[in-house]
Length: 198
Image (tube, rainbow, N blue to C red; front, side, top):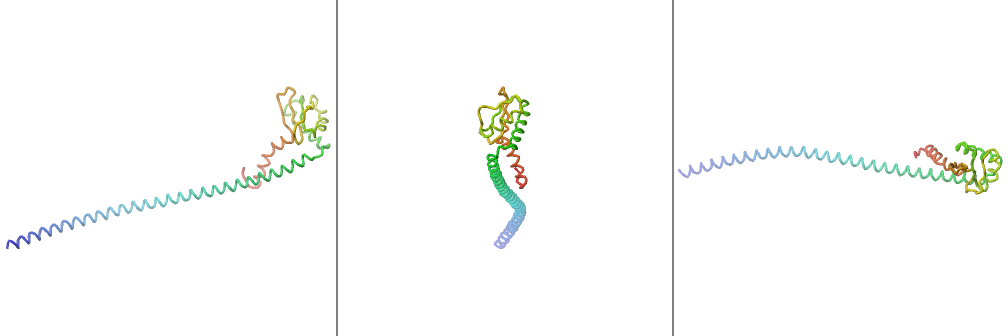
């Protein structure tokens, strides 16, 4: 009988222990499920953030590539415009250099002299010009009292460079200087005409 009682007691203890362990395992399993569900939501949020950040980075890289390509195309356009302007100016300079020094050219020189003396505010000037224009400029100077032709000549396509007699003021109204002043404006107009912003 004692052995039956002992066996029942052991079975009872085993059943209670099994129930307690089973209950603890069920609790741990439920807790693990909750933790896993909580972690899953966090992981999904992290996954969405990684995907979103990746898309933003891809968009940024795409914009950089497109921007770089646009800049490169614009630079090529500007270079082509610059080359075309240089060619046109080269041809124009060749024509100007070969131009006859006739009456219409004398009128141009007179106009350049008038503009130069008006800019300096005096006709009391020394006038420099090219060897080729020396005679034309000399004849034009008769209309500008106080102006004198310099003994030295300068290298230029034509036109005049004047210096006040006291040497304090100079105005370069040679064809070279005028072309140099106009070239950026002409380049800008051509670039604008072809849709290339400078």
